[in-house]
Image (tube, rainbow, N blue to C red; front, side):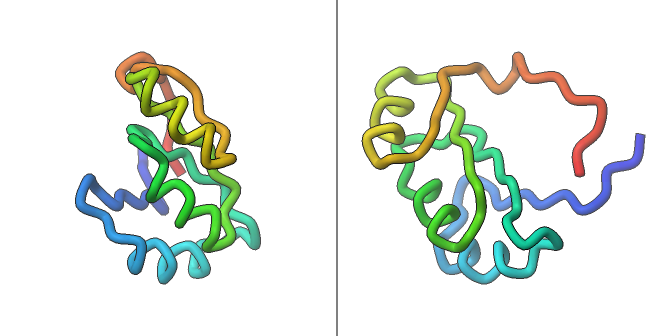
Length: 87
């Protein structure tokens, strides 16, 4: 399996990086999965930078907080997500 165009911002990602990186993504409206979205603070910044973003977190309170910010978020354990490839 070849992983290409994979971007990992990591747990210490700052909104400055997000605002710089999202406009450089190849799609006009990139689709971003914020795995472990927490309270949605970074998820909102990703959306404000022009991406279509969905948050996922394993904590119900964090999913609720993200949803309250107007961002779609779902309750899910990231370990349960299976992918054949990441682009």
